Length: 426
Image (tube, rainbow, N blue to C red):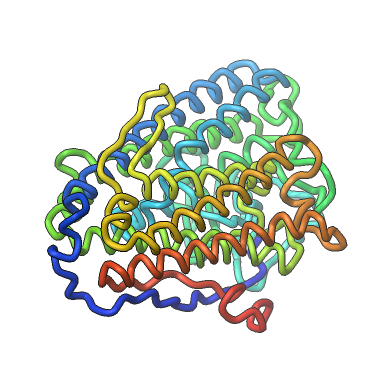
């Protein structure tokens, strides 16, 4: 998916009256250190589940590559979708935890110029003013010319594709992570805002009946990317382990830890999810701005992002094995601090939950996929998506009120699509 716009994030400041919040102001609520311990415990559990599901994905990928056919391809695609469920719930840890932000780009970077990886349709074009590697096509070329150097790509390995991530300092050169794997499993979605997802044939990996050439190299790429995903998620899991850097940082300064929690909640609600992932695509009616654009799984990614925020605010996470990790919560702290603001936050989050449920149910029913909902001349679908944006913005402002009640101050990611719409497309 190529990125036609270079958008600058604006800053939305969510501020309370003072950074000097005293412990006495929160005395009736749970100990902030206990809240942060539960937060880290939930983070570790979510990433453990993400690793487990990524391992299942690799198992399905290996089975597909051993016997490429429609059934094994379908199983690999379903495993990819299942792997997104716990991972998307972890995104609430972004923005407030630098250790996670440092790793996130290797796991969930998007959008991507898929011509870097493999063959593309002629409608994709052959050049890009902003990306010299727009159609590098690693899979087709055992020798790559980059930055005046020749790179030996005779063997596609995890090390090779890692070296290509953000090649030329261009964020659209996404070579690894969930979305690279998604493209390799589905191929391009050439349906625009019409029905249908990507439809890569299983024979793209069948060395005995190969379509589009280089089936052995394509298999090596998919195998390498799947192995890397596990390794990178394990690094994220370690951030919140008993001796993890993130857990230690959070517990060393409970006030700063609460700021980290609200920064993640506010930034994901506002600039990232409401803005860059949702409003932007709706404004442009552009499926190229859809988060899971090859698989038409965006409705689920959005839904589980919100579920992760609900989990964290409530201090409770249901694991993939059905067990629960729970502890003292921000919700309990807010209830003890300011009952009116506490109710406002819950009401706002429940409104967003309802909007996300409508989005998910509409897509899951087969009535209309997300990219159809954001299409032009579709007021009903546009309204469903706009309601997601509006409730997320309302949720962010409810967090603003909570931050104020606690006497904290946070800076939250913004988005031109929300803060300066006239700049979009410039």
